[in-house]
Image 1 (cartoon, rainbow, N blue to C red):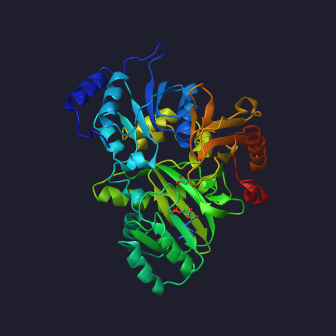
Image 2 (cartoon, helix red, strand yellow):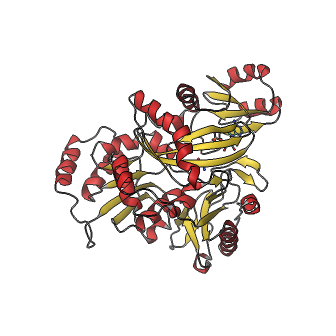
Amino acid sequence: MKGLFGGEAVYKKIWEQRKQRSPRRSAGAPGLNCLVLGGGGREYAIAWRLANCNSVTTIDAVPGNAGLSLFTRVIDQSPDNVSWLDEHVLASFIDLAIVGTDELVAAGIGDALRRSGISVVGPSKDASKVEWSKSFAKELMAEAGIPTSRSESFADAGAAKEALAHWRAPVVVKADGLALGKGVTVARTLEEAAEALATPPANSGRVLLEELLEGEEASLQALVDGEVVVALPPARDHKRAHDGDTGPNTGGMGAFSPTVVLPDDQAQAVAEELIAPIAAALAKRGTPYRGVLYAGLMKTAAGWRVLEYNARFGDPEAEVTLPRIEGDFAKLLFALGEGRLAEYIAAEPIRFSKRHYVDVVLCAENYPGPPKTGMPIVGLDRLPENVLAFHGATKRNATGDVVVGGGRVMHIVASGDSIAEARDRAYAGAERVSFEGKFYRSDIAQQEVAVA
Ligand code: AMP
Ligand code: GLY
């Protein structure tokens, strides 16, 4: 992170400015000036949802992507440049900042932005350790009495390899730190586990061995303000690269919400059981959490188990859950970022729409390996009704065409009155958008359609 402890003078100016309440930046009615940090599908979904709120006047996206430039001001700056962020908050009268990505959260951008006194959705670096260190998460789970898989943490792969002798296959090998969803290997044999320990990212730094859990996964995101926990609509994602849950783990190949595995009406109770105790443990340690806390869950024969926590919205979970949150989402986030979540929710209880959403992710050739980029994307003007294209890794080339900019290129997000309808629409949309090397899974939400 660049220039973290720069310019007290900037904060003084921001405080002065805030005393006068946000002057208008644009010709619209006075309202919230928002800043979204990141540039993937999740940040697109956040900005899109904010853009649908009457309370919002402006949205800035840093660094954004080619699609975000259609309805936000995209600023080509590094989102971890703190002295620039401070100046930007001041110059653009920013009221609400949302830290989108795990790297920015872990770099302490939430802490840096909070110094200016604006509303920030994004936990402190210390509180987000629950995501950036899996061994810390396990420690906290033990302290808070959260059911999770048995595990052992090692200083390095060498020590883990020696300990393998005491483990029985199958075993899960996990890098301790952030790995863009690619740090986990489910090893069916001890040889496979040893192989994973010899390859990145497991072969550098702290690593965990974990008991394999069997069951159905669900993703539960919650707004957390100290000890106050408000569940968002549950979702499921598909992490493996290929159909039938084969191939390597990815950041996520698709998602849907709601889900029969964790119905909407059980979300708050499960969040009280599996997220609130973690929030309480963090508060007790003097590192209270303020932001979105995401629990990756597995419904086993013995009940719910937590696989991991993430200190941010899920990606692609945000794409299918944020459209389902009714009411003025910006005001809700603003209250959270100001530490007024309990008060806000008491007056405006959260409501989820009954519509079903499915996201099919269009990926670039070779993802999750280094993707092939630069190919033009066509067909965005030919999407069927009720289908949206949430841009992920897109950019513009010198002539202004929208081109592939990374691995998860485009999220085709469709809605319907049933999961089957939403799924059919998403796939109709996925076929119409093309670029060289495009691939996607053909079985997103397939099983859900069968059981719903
Ligand atoms: P994580 O990043 O910890 O959520 O792991 C990514 C994915 O790996 C999870 O969503 C699961 O599909 C799988 N996984 C992780 N830990 C386990 C486990 N202990 N048992 C079974 N699958 C797991
Ligand atoms: N979809 C999993 C994640 O956001 O980490």
